[in-house]
Length: 559
Image 1: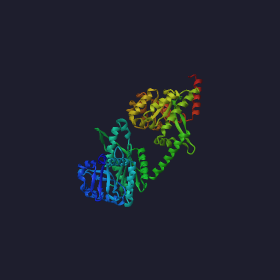
Image 2: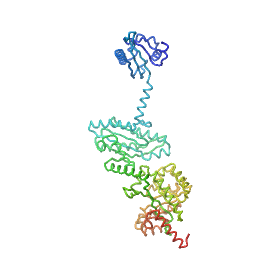
Image 3: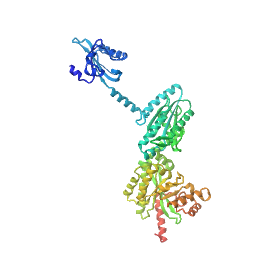
Image 4: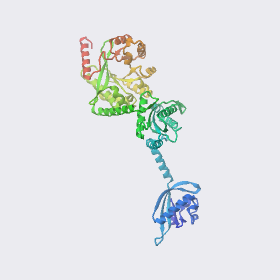
């Protein structure tokens, strides 16, 4: 029996009715650094602190009085004051007549298990990268902050923070640098918070700060702007200095919500408002923003249904050679006809489609349908003209955009030189290096690249030489009434000179008057489009117009 007890890797013992040790095993002696026989006749008061010993004695008495097994997890103190955890089991010891004559027990060291459990509990409530609170942790902490605010009659402010253009750091310098930036941002947010406050990371570059004990909404706005300025101070990673801006949304208790879900939803809506109106500032949630958000959500649901129900269709606007007035190209225009909403203007649904990423599915459909339609015209004996298709920022920033388009070209046997991709200045300048690589690959395959609305974006002329471009489209805001707006004329003249210097073709948009057309002709603009020459039209109307032009050319003896 002694050999069996000594083989057990747990503390094992037997005590009499006075809680004096009658037997301990070898492991018991090893833990305390003593020979097992030296414990005989001693009590827990000889081994542990008075408080712990009294607890052990009480457990012994409870086992002997109840005659039942007792199991508990408890803190133990070993030799030298080492603190740990043990899972203890105690049972009564009986004689041949069934009388309780002592207790026997085992104690298993579960210190490592308890540490692992503590770590699991911590990770369940904290972000793995920054050690800030995560979503569940924020909600739990916010509930406590709100409860304290209700009792004290004070306010609470919740800030939803998104770093502007943080994706550029990850994409250009790698996630290692991005993680270090996030660490520093987390430390700045953590510094200066009081006992009534909380900070957490929801994921990516999104953070939430909750400030308790707020006296007024204006005080909350003041603290929020102070926090924003602290975050926008330059930071250094691996010897390189970075300057970041952030967009912030604020909601407050009790005005904007009485629980965490309502507050974080309101602050998130306000943050997106700040993001969509210039970035780098703080926006407050209000009822109007809430109503706008509900409308966007309803629009998003209808857009998803529209994709499934095939409610989109294409219109086509001809582009004309200014000298001959012949159609030399076609711009594809997306339209949406909804049974409930009617014909929805693109300005209403395109931003929602981009924000919800539905534009990726829609954009792919537009590209494919444009190719299919152009091929259908060609099979009908009509000329296959270059087809210009607008790309959204989300489409352009897909890492496999060139592969997607190449796949469509192969699938439909569509000639690459009859596809023209239209992008805005801001789209190509945002995340410029990966975008340039994609465009270079597309242009090598024969696809033409066009800059839409030139002059309204970054106006960073350096990109004209760095990016593979074929066409500049002069924005309609410069074309409208150009013949009577002398302040606009030098701008258009400069654009024409730039296009010539870089060997780019020019297209003027929005031409609605003969006087505008004449002025553009004098400047040397080659191509135009606008209501003066042709409005957007259906595929059938476009086919009829191309056929009529073809008939006229044949009558005139032209090919």
